[in-house]
Length: 354
Image (cartoon, rainbow, N blue to C red):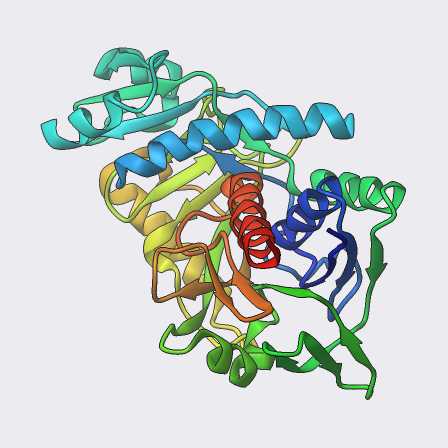
């Protein structure tokens, strides 16, 4: 069965869906409002953390499935896009310990003393022990995006930059662009991302009662040569408190601090907040539990992503499929999201055709 597919949005989720569709014999075009890959997309950046999802047991299983798919994909792309740094989760109470110990058969329990020795920045911190997941680590986001685009072109996927969408019709598979052009496809995959707010009316109409909210996420890059940044070799996924996560100096990229508590709804077209104030807030959240972070400084960066008011990663309405890997799970699960979406949609189409 020959199927034409149009993917709207060339972030990591859209690109990996396009790859999965091409593997399954579909004729695929990918459009984006900017360049492809788009340096302003939520997927762009130096690196992303791949780790078990501590707050939800099913996400722990998904993390291992995603890791296996990333290993396979990066071999296929011949892309050195992953560093197995190992990821540490600090446990502040017995309940968090019971949660985190279940997620990996190869996990290692580290005492408080061993954790502080291996991760000097945690010395004097408020935690009872830590779990090391040695098989997880960092995905090099930009490098992966460019490798995927090159590979898609070799597979015959058409990449169409600077195509801004004004309207999407789910029943007909018609996509209208701001410049007046129209495109049609058997299936239209809408990869919710940093440009979703511009077609919010179309998106809300397609998704029914599902609300899509644009979120702003802040990270802080530290000066790798400054005193106090003698970090251990491991990444960290949660240090308690306000969802503290980050990465050490990896392949020359400065240490990165993340604080999920600061992620809030934000219209991308509105002026930015005071980034110096955000920097101070990040350090304040870290130093509440880990005093070694109190003197650190760095540069704050941010991006936008789309949060759905449902944990599901995709929604089908006639010929349109709205999808996201960002309802709390992000870049790290993109190949798993692509596989789930394409399997569900193409199997459904095959049954309808039969």
